[in-house]
Amino acid sequence: MRGGILNKARRGEYRCPLPTGFIYNEVGDVVLDPDAQIREMITHFFETFSRVGSATQTVKAFASEGLLFPSRFRNSKRVVFQPLTTSTALRTLHNPRFAGVYAYGQRLYRRTVDGKKQVRKREPNEWLACIPDAHPGYISWEQFQHNLKALEANGQGYQTARVSPPREGAALLQGRVICGRCGCHMRARYVTRRGQVDTWYVCSRAYVSRGEPHCQSIAGWPVDAAIGELIAAAMTPAAVELALEIRKEIEARYDEADKLRLRAVERAQIDADLAQRRFMLVDPNNRLVADTLEREWNDKLRMLADLREERARALREDRATLDDAIRDRLIAMTADFKTVWCDPTLPNRERKRLLAYLVEDVTLLKFQAEGETRIHIRFRGGRTETLTTQNPKSSAQQVKTRPEVVELVDKLLDDHICAEIADILNARGIRPGGSARRGKADAQFTDLRVIYLVKQYGLRSRYDRLRERGMLTKAEACAKLGITECTLVRWAKYGIVKRHAYNGYIGLYELPGPHVPAKQCSRWNQLAHRAEAIRRLNSSKCSDLKERAVV
Image (cartoon, rainbow, N blue to C red):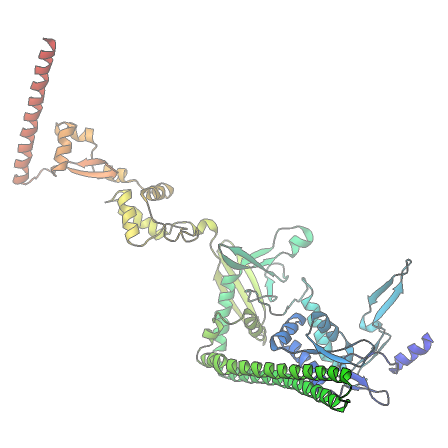
């Protein structure tokens, strides 16, 4: 019996359970399901997967459009429409029946010693039967193979040529970055720092497999910005044709979704009519059956009303979106594609999808000494482009004071003390280095910060600058002028001697030159005589006090 089954399977005559969307006709041939809603829903499923490139994204697309996927109960002809799940999507994509291929023996079943059943998937070349074009299908065999490769690429973290489907992350070159040192594909990493998410491209295969250091770790946001500017510049001349194609694609997508919703409304109308006929044919005196049929009729009518309302609501939303937001965006695209590319409301997935049509891969090579990253871009048509970006500054460089601020402080030290320099910098709106990075954008300079800059950058202190200009200390000035310190302070107060502060209230003194105006000289002489008289009076008072004390 087993041999007979295998022989019939090799000829493609053994009848196996069919997936949803296929039935056996009167003569036993496999044909497409005559239900138009089932056929159109399955066709829409494969078209959606070809567009988004991921089973999970296909499930999300069905959920966002409010579409239900047909499913047949096991060993039953009854088909129900229910929300699409990831397991159903994967099972549909892996079934070769949808490509019109008769396949048998895709799995190998074995019994273990304890009686448990083990299942192992076989490779296509190990199948017991694989007959292409055995019956009508929804897709071609080539499309089926392409779908399997896409699923395999989505499920593998490392691969010689990894091109994953676009996701929601900010990494623009996700799955397309190649390390310029080892040639492996780099992975995208996201790091949250100071309330924002930073993108990094990391070549970590050597670290994961052999425990070696990372080959390269490159900041992603400068690279993504350079690639975005290049794409925007390249796409601007073709923006008009692209806008028209996008408009047609969006309209076709909305029309297809509305057509599928209309099929659901028609099915609900058929079920409501059938429930009505059943209720009309029942004997009115048999209230037990009549009440049940009436309740079923009411349920079908409510379901029909809900579907109509849902279709009308979705149609209004689609048209409103197409007529307002999409139209404005397409008009902006024809004028300036860069505006659309930099639009914050545009999902990152859409940017990656657009990039996939233009760029084959991008090779990154980091030069630590020069502080730059070399970007080699290979386009789909074979053209190449090379860009250079500056690497972001390290934490130490970010908190470092700018060179122009240090030069300004060095210049101001000739005529101002540290406290005055701090006030001048604050008045000009200059902030200390790294204040924004520390979350203190309103931080200001103080005299201690200025003193730190002077010592950290080896600037000449104000004391040394004044000494080089010939300024004297208080003791030196008094010795040279032959006066006391009190007299020197008074002379500095009245402007006879110029005092230059260098540390708060401590300063150096500049003696008057040989040519002093007559008015200033007379004033100087008066003050000198007055000071001498006060000194003599004080000395006489002191001598009188001493004599009295002796007495």
